[in-house]
Length: 210
Ligand SMILES: O=P(O)(O)OC[C@H]1O[C@H](OP(=O)(O)OP(=O)(O)O)[C@H](O)[C@@H]1O
Ligand SMILES: O=c1cc[nH]c(=O)[nH]1
Ligand SMILES: [Mg+2]
Image (cartoon, rainbow, N blue to C red; front, side, top):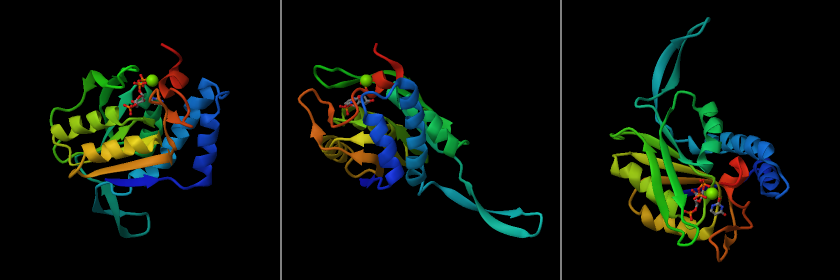
């Protein structure tokens, strides 16, 4: 697994505002989108392209076009939905599939309650969106789901991760082509499975308590 942790003052600045407990939902949502667009730039570094020839008003020239099949973006509901707009802004021609997952806050085990994805993901590059990588249970299950359907490679974009979650994901995806792009790598998980210092519950901060 390749791990890329963003190292840019603008990203750290936006993450700092996101972490602040006084930041209200509308600002939190806007910053989440902006951060994803910045991280998506790195995450799409190896997106599949093919050479094409085009005609400018002045001359013929060579360029690149995204290859078929188009990349598939998969936000993990709920919190990952807050990252979708920021991603498709950068890759407007991507297709979008959905996975709904929720972590049991007692056992920390994830369950999948919704799935809307193509049956066959052969030759697909997939981009999974979830702001939080805590124990790694949710993201490991999501990525396994995509490989089981034939995905070629998977890149996950997370705003924050705990080292425990990165290690668990690495173990769960051994031998697979996985890239992890992070806004920041935090210190640890606390006894409730929350990322420290983290930002709290991303889904609740985006969409309110349920
Ligand atoms: O790495 P893990 O320990 O599995 O925890 C991370 C998961 O927890 C959060 O979702 P949550 O279950 O709170 O659902 P929500 O997005 O609906 O709030 C988060 O968005 C991840 O999906
Ligand atoms: O810190 C955490 C851990 C899991 N899910 C969140 O939203 N935040
Ligand atoms: Mg939540």
